[in-house]
Image (cartoon, rainbow, N blue to C red; front, side, top):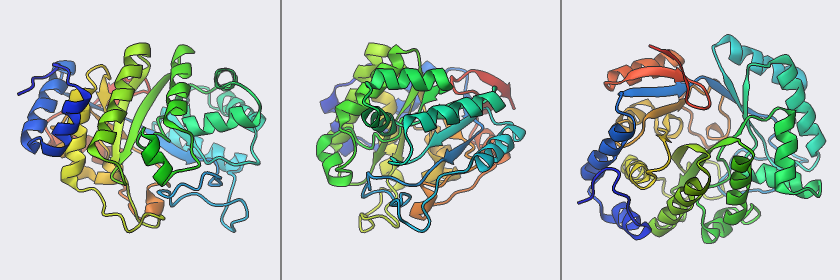
Length: 348
C-alpha cells in the first residue's frame, strides 16, 4: 500500500502501470491531488493552437499533420491570417496562444524573431507559449548557435513560455522506432533545462500508446521528476494517448480509456514535485476528462479554440468554454479560468 506524497521508485511506477488496481490507483492519485490542491478548484486556460507551418523534415511515423515542402497543401501562415486568429482569440477571452509548427527548412531564426516581435507589438497582452524543444534545437543548428543563445534571442523577441511537445516518450529506443529523425531524449531535456535557467516556465508532456513499455513510461516520468527537482521550471504535466489514424502507425491498437486513466494516476503519484496534471479532453473526450479529475488531474487544459494536429489523425472533439465550465461543475468542482502560470483570472 502506498499513500499520497509518499514518493515511489521507477520500478514501482512500472509495476503499478502493469498490475496496479485501477480504482486503487485512482484513490491514491486523487488523495495526492487533494493534498496538493485542497481547494477543489479545477482550472482551464482560454487559448488557441496556431500552427504557423505544416512543413516538417522530421516526418515522424506517428504524425498525420506534417507535409513535405513540395506538397500541394504545404503552407506557411500569412501575417494577416496569424493576426486574425490572435485577435479572435483575445475577443473570446483568450490569454495565450500555443504557437507551433514543423521543422521548416525555409524558416530561419530571423523569421521567428520577427514573427514574435510583430505579435507582441500588436498584441502585448497575449502570452506566447511556443516552440517545442525539437523546433528550438533545429533553429539553433541551422543558425550555428547554442540552445541557450537561441532561447535567449527568442525570449528577447517575445517568447514567454515553452510547451512540452516533441517529448513523446523519453526513451531513445522508442524514439528510434517512431521518430528516428527527431532529437534524442537528452536534447529535449537540455532545452527544458536551459529554458528554466533563463527563467522561462514550461510544460512537460508524454504521448503514450505506440510501441513503448511500462518501463519506458516509468523512465519518462523519472526524467521529468529529476529535472523538476533540479530546476523547478515545469508548471504542469500532460499525458495523452497516441491517435493512430492517418499515420504510418495506423495499424497500432489505440490505448483504451482504462490505459489512459492508469497512466494519468501513476503520473500524479510519481510526479510529486510537479504542481499540476492536465486532463486531455482533446484525445479522450469531455466525459473521460471528467473522470480524469478523480484520477489525479486538477486542470482541464485549454479551450483550444483551434486544434489541427490531433484532428489530422481523425480525432476531433470540439467544446466551448461553457462546455468546460459545465463539465467541471458536473464533476463536483469549482471552475476557474487561469493564465499560463496558473494564476487565477476568475471563478465561475
